[in-house]
Image (tube, rainbow, N blue to C red; front, side):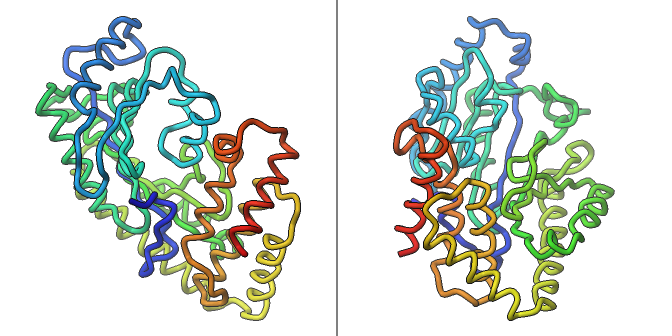
Length: 336
């Protein structure tokens, strides 16, 4: 089973990943901010018994992880792989995580809500991710009574999630729109129709490697499927704009930029994470445009595995300089 960053959608290479997130709470129990530690431990035990060991087609067996036992490197490496949110990683007190074998499913327990169910897939596969999410929601609702109001829908800690409790998002690789400055115009336009453009790690983050998250903002007065369909339609239009912009580029200049990036990655002895991401973005563009004959999965795999905590989780703690040396070595070896 492959992770999301090891999968490329050949029909839509600009769509890096699809994510469905459902926020759910248990009826009659305070939101996490108002719970004491004993209440939190009871809820974690209930959810562990309900979810741990369940097997699902396409994602494998779900496993409960005690977050208190995780070292810092492993915890924040999960953030870098988009398995958990930065807020969840930094949150103190009892919390739990249920995760599938291929990391496509991750269920954060006692983040902002009792349950934050996420399904993450490589490429443009929102509907497939949604189907898996609804199967797991069915398991939850079969063993629990979820907090739901006939007028307002699913009840959540934050009013902006009230209603469907659904956040659908697509991670898009948009180097040419970014370079031309048109992305800010697009972001302003989509905000008027209930969507938002954010950085690589969602709200409050900035873009790296020309990677942007496009997601829905409206959760009240709209069905889950309508929100997904709307997001898909707008994402398709944005990708078409990116592809059209690529056709207008000076081919020789693009090839020069792509091969310079590849050369640096192949021969550099020290690489910061920021430089690595920018260079891999150029290589990914070169592969998409048919300039480079390299495995299309490689840029995103290297980008994720070359992140600071992911490197340290695999190789032990090290100084920033040693990390930059190791990152360069790993990339040289993988590129051959």
